[in-house]
Length: 321
Image (cartoon, rainbow, N blue to C red; front, top):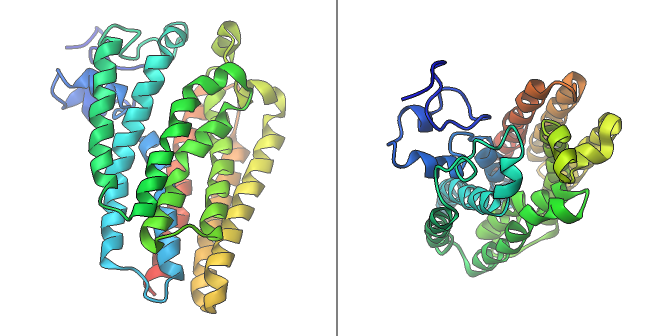
């Protein structure tokens, strides 16, 4: 079923057109999958990629290279990212149901549009979280502890836009936690390269989520939601340039700290090439950005999947040579 324009019934305004949720998923599950943003997979990628950075950089720094268990870390993080991104988005929609109803882009989401009740949404949140916890239990104890600790920034993030102009910082703290967790899942303990990788990921989040937030600046101003997009306004370009430099510098330092002590210059060069490629992609986005063009903002935001994949792929090559 759909409307006269062929739009599937219940489709969310900013969903990817022709996505599998709206076209192939069972009708009874569609509202819940929309709560999880399964119709908008970019968020899962952005949560997953720092995990892959962490495990691949740890493996590249390990004289033994990739281990068989690392393949499970890669797969387990992918499943966990899908589930925890879904749980986080469900929590976000529960807490933001009144705000979402007042914003043109979000009023079609399942709760404000009446597809599910807040109580049903909370039950869905619990189901996703429990399955993700089961995956977490397959990792070492240090990684399990980090995974449990990650719930704190996840719980706080939806409220950040009510009390700070920098809610993107809280998103970055939550979304890049996987860099710490996956590094620790491989090594058994945290180390400075993982911390710098994490900080670089936070700067990357500030870059891409400021672009994303420029879609809603008018509505956000009307209802009092704060964001870096509203804070920076016409000065967004210079701020994004700073975030770009910070992200690439911090991730580059993480690579140097992880790989230079081992003395394998080829591995170091390959990994740094991945960081450079990510920086090039971010610079390309910045060159195209028009903050008044909401469709372009969404396109550039989604392109960060490719930006984040570049270092992940180069780190993987460095881990296997």
